[in-house]
Amino acid sequence: FLIASESDSANPVAVAAARALSEGGVDARVVVTGARGPNKKADQLARALASEPDARATIVVADSDVLLSRETVDALVAPLAADVADAAWAPPIEIDARTLADRASQAILDASLHAFALLGAIDPRGMVGKCFAIRRGALAEVGGFGALVDYLGEDMELASRLRHAGLRVQPTAIPAASLASGRSWREVVDRYARWITVIRAQRPRLLVSYPLLFAASPLQVILAVAMIVIDARSGVAMLVAVFAVRWGVAAAARSSSGRPLAGLALAPWLADVTLLAAFVRAISARTVSWRGAAFRIDPSGAIVEVQK
Image (cartoon, rainbow, N blue to C red):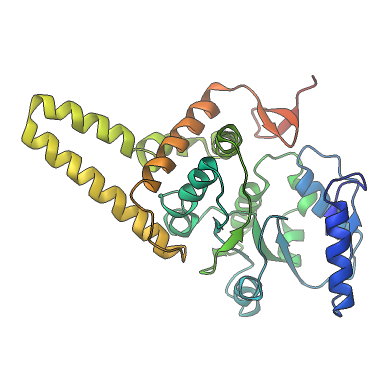
């Protein structure tokens, strides 16, 4: 369990978890990394691996909000063991929505084209680092986690480096369930704005896909309503088509994510409105807030902390 410092609020929880696992015969411990890099996750991972020279050949990384299961880990490790991939990642979903903002985030991940169970098939060059496995040799070949410390989207940069090196990355069919909850609307919008900022910095040609593909339905509804004024029959047909296609995408996303189909009436629209708000936030803001600090992204795609 990696924490940046002993004053980290996660420290008592990590210590208790490590102790419980150790008592059950598992080799588990807390590592205080002292990470200070702009991307503290990448920095923590780099420092942890540097302190484990004899670590196993396969590395599995999971964010602290992931409900890690045997099934998830097996699905990640299997393609590496079968030598069909050098890295594998689990599409994230959220399963503990408590607020309206939580439900919006949940809908983005399991009821939209941004659901990574679908997006992984649409865009095989991508990767989500919430829960993944990688060969240690493959990681070393692309510079290790230390080479990712200056990137906001360390997972996207890692995927890019792996593919440029001719290495294989693939998603798993088993999702990674996140327990993130209790968030405000601003927190959720900021979270997806950071992701879109990563796209803006590291894959700018895909930026236009947000209003034209991932969150196009609200705009299409507005166009259909406007069309009704001009040609009622065509406008109504367009409106019906927009709703039918959007619900069809939501059903496919839920099915691919292993999620129930209940509650699909409003979820797709909640997802799209949230993504549109995040898109506006990402293209209008000069800085991005992350883990209590403000950053700007320089022309090379690296993040630079903005001193207050």
